[in-house]
Image (tube, rainbow, N blue to C red; front, side, top):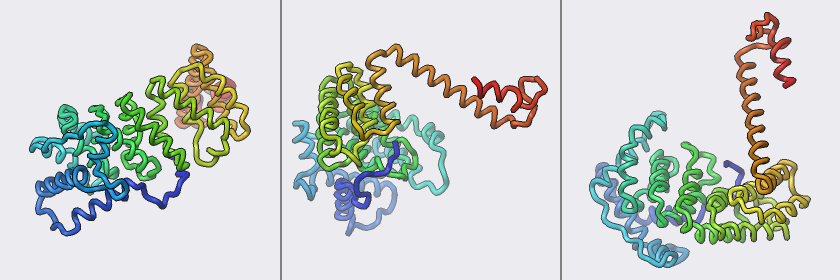
Length: 347
């Protein structure tokens, strides 16, 4: 889901600026840690200070105080035990690797570490939230996977901010980071709805588009989500010029496919009449309409498209392996271009 950012790329997200300011404040006069153990202890102290003591420059509150305002409860964090520190240390083992690493091999090596951290649940969230602040590290990918498995509402705001900071990052080394954050928000479920709706409304006011946030919300199949999406679609139809140049309508429309509510059909058909849509956008909207009107017919058409794609891919593979002037693999002793190649093209 990589795309060109519609808003100012030169302006770093407020959350990242705040975090960078905090790191500079905390570590400014501190000496370099002597070893890994000392480094991790210092990081733990920083995490506690950042979440519970330092006031944010924009709100004048700590992240812990803001959490309490939103969820009505304290974000209780216990002291990190030695076992957790050791597990987090293992998770970061390849962050500073000088040689190129194979992601799948590393993940296989760390599978027991990942499993152990998942079993600790919310007790390790602060450490995991800290790790996802460094998306260039391979441990960030593993941390997101663990957060997704834990499914805690305490991670919602962290995941939203992660997507905002990284959706337009062309240097997603391990790929799929925002996908993982998106899936995590969806799988947390109903608790994600209000924070996502609040964030998307704010993005619309600022003319900012984050497709992963919209996808995370639209994949939660609860009527409240459908109502919000329907209202937004109605506003788009009423004044589409307000959304021109920054809002991507098709990823949003595909969300109605997931919601699977035929009551949207009149609005979708009205959307087809707008003059600002491209041909490929019209095709996507018609696909969603077909799915809602006649699911069985849609499945038949979808399977047919998949079969055509499969045949095209197989033909491409054959053409790569068999030259046009080579003997046809069917055994006719004719050249490939005069035999099966022509038949395949006609089909």
